[in-house]
Length: 357
Image (cartoon, rainbow, N blue to C red; front, top):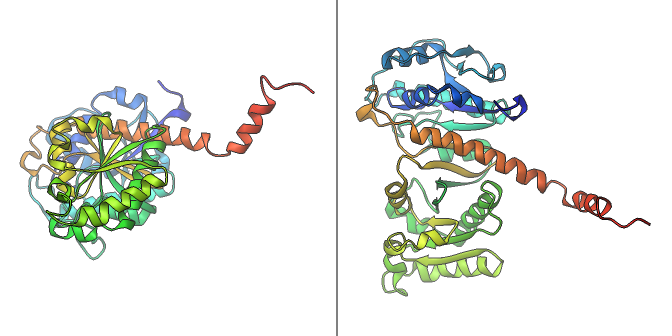
């Protein structure tokens, strides 16, 4: 077991109550060895978790608390965000399911901001049922960007494949008009910084996919690649970034060309997510890069069609936790090494090997 100071507190939002969020969370901690390297803090209520556990026929203990700061190592901690017992109708998209998902999310984000948890792992929400006067965001990423600060990047990651998005939850018809030199600049820099700080890659190589089929074929099939993408990438190259492209998206993954790069930037949601999920489904993690704090989530949705049936696979949720913990350690080490380079240089000069006067 790790020392107490090394135990990372993992804040967990429960997601849509009618989906598979509760199931994959509980299944992830059926193996008590998970508690050896992290302390889970689930934001929901003991009544809700008890109902989920009983419905699924699972045997496990958990520890109810009123505040994340009361979390105990070696236990599955549940913060009582609500006192009532919300109706749960597995497999149905309801306003109630969405409302409690947002209560959980907001409480978890507040604890993250207050450093009562070290990272946040979010179970899936339903984008329609969460909409209200108090929450008008298309998904987690946009909300977290507002609450945690920074320029967010939706980054789908595995050990061998990392795909970020220039535009994420927007209609396909709007994506080209939203891609500007400023956006390209921000997203490339966010990816580059994340690959260095969060994944320990010293000199990241980044590939950018084309906006149009065949990257526009020199303007024959759309001019955006020639007029917007290529000049922006050249400026970044001239500034020292190892960024390449644009590459035709239809052959980029089929030829295994992606294996030559540390990160890939896709222009719109499905251009990046279709190949990612084809190559990595069940192993992939959605990481919101570029923010002041760390958030990950599994690469699947609420899966209403199997909710409450005991069929949900917790693999991606576990990967989201492992990845979040790994990123936390990489980021802590990076920040420590770069905190005061001048001081470290002086220490090296006056330390072992320095000449005596």
